[in-house]
Amino acid sequence: MNTDMLEKNGKAGDTLVWMETHTVLLSLLLLQGSAFVEELDDSFMDTKGSDEIWLIEFYAPWCAFCKQLDPVWHQIGSELRSLGSMVQVGKTDATVNTGLAKEFRVRTYPAILMLKKDTKYNYPGPRTKEGIMDFASRIEGPLVRSLSSPQLFQHAMSHHNVMIVYVGATSELKGNFTSVAEELIAHTYFFSTTRNVLPKSVSLDYLPAIIVFKDGTYVIYDEESDGDLKAWINRERFPNFQHIDSYTLYAMGESGKLVLLAMVEERYLSDKSLRYKHLVERVAEEHKETYSRFFLFGFMAVGDYINGFVMGEVTAPSFLVVNLSNDGYYQPVGPVETERHLLDFLDGVLDSTIEMKGGNGFSQRVQRIIYEAKATLIPVFREAPLIGCFLAGFPLAIGAFFCFLCCRNRTTTDDEDEDTAALSATSVPQRKKIKDKKSD
Image 1 (cartoon, one colour):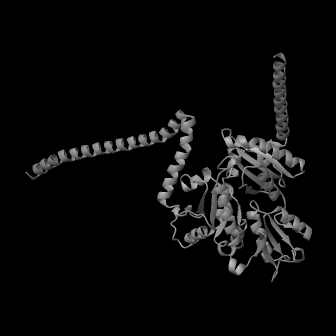
Image 2 (cartoon, one colour):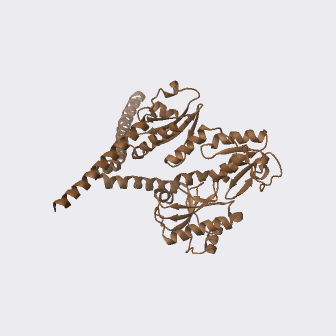
Image 3 (spheres, rainbow, N blue to C red):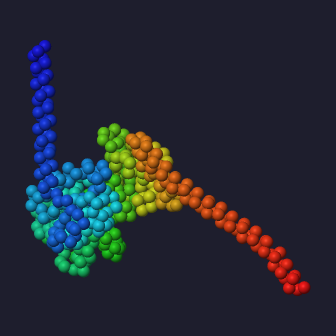
């Protein structure tokens, strides 16, 4: 018995020592990271150097997402410094340093932006260490990166799902390409090379040219048929099929294409979800020539973003086509179990035989406001009923107060009108008597 007690006490002691050691190490890492993250204030724009590159987080003390991002942010500061990056990392309380927040047009928290030679870039991706580090690398480097050898080209191909490449010497087209790169560098990389660096399998009829490499093939820009270069790149900068999160789906709105989604569970995919995902992937690959002009394809976990988009509960697994240009969406009218069923669904969307739901009309906007208010207030009521009652009751109280003032003002006006009418009525006989006396 005593031996067992000693063993239990020993294990408990080891666990306690491990927890204390882990806590100390975590604290040291955070302290080390904080040394590479500078707290900024409203004087930042006046004191920074003209050639400095800054990665800045705008946070609010009450923001839960900001608190989750904080340890990641310090890791980013430490890692960028260890890599010898020229990017300096800072953070600022946007509720205190309102001048700096206004300068960067911050509306939501946490907001992540980069400043390079007075040009501001807004980070559009997920709040992950890898995503933010990649964003910092894109902005820090040149707008258009040169690939001077086949080895460099193959290395870039192995690290990027989509490559946008200018081929040829200096020209007016390259100037246009560079201008578009300055606008879209926050979203993707831009490269330049010469004809002899490209793989032999790439066939070009003319130079200069702009090529998008993706999905194991390539697309060449034709100014006459493709129109505006920026719009074309926005259409082509996404892989034909990919895992889509809320940030990616929002960015896909700039492509002008519809998006076919296989809606699946967030963590563990059921057999049916896997079948739906593979079905969308097969259609995207085998029917690329027919549908890639109109659709992007992918799979997405059901969550608050897509539920808010349709203003309801999306089930998993299911199929959904979203039109991000007008907040509309399409759902199959019957079961979709085969490739033929899915193709019929896509054809029905294109020829309008399947009715679009949602949209951005007046009634839909009102419904969206009501839905978002409910989605915001219900969790508050669950966690803090008193605060929820205050948030719900305060606007109603303000509205009732204004109604009271309007009614009171109207009543006062009516009383004044009655008094004026009475005075007018009594003055008429008086004027008549005076007139009669004058006539006598």
